[in-house]
Length: 283
Ligand SMILES: [Zn+2]
Image 1: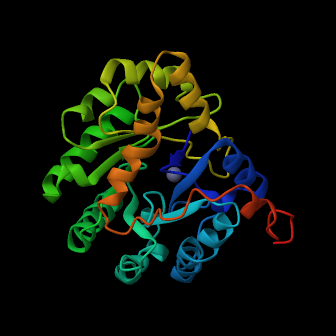
Image 2: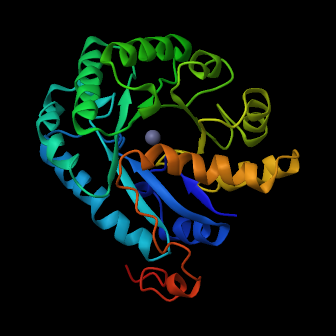
């Protein structure tokens, strides 16, 4: 089984996580730029973070035989802080980097006018850079937030095939299914979405344009929930090819639209990461 986690915040995870992921079959990840919990007070903090997402973190992942790509954005929450808005001027140079496969995560947190503006601005940047976008939907007022997100995507004239609407659930998936956008689902340990619920959604809505991620970050989360969902799919009667489609080929197709997804040589044997300095804790 090969797994591509299309949304995971490895910056917040340990090398033990990388090792467990590699052992379980995770071979590729996309790490979206997001809110770090501690508010950033200036644009320089974003520069260091973005550099880490395209430099240090891919190196760390490579020690475990995992290919790492990133998405770059001003996240919805910090779009409300005037101290952070200067990052929008820095983004164009990051959107040209090889390891950057989308603009994201953008979208709504509290649906403020500042968030409206940041979302529209970054959709325009994605259009200009011919990159896909990863769109976060809010955890509160999810249905209203998803509807409003789809309206803004529509106004942007962006091709919906270049848009991934993430953190969907049973209520919001029907809103997105017929738009042509890709549909992302974040699987959580206790709340919001579980492997059995995800399997039910796949049974009901099919496998086309469906992506499953762990969204693991600094909160209570589990980077192996992609693998658990794959196992739950097999147990429910889906074939290995179905699992490969949802957990590998769909994310490859979506992010591949950037023209920058590099998955060469990733079936590295276990020995190449087991002996690395970071695997031994020397990082
Ligand atoms: Zn996220």
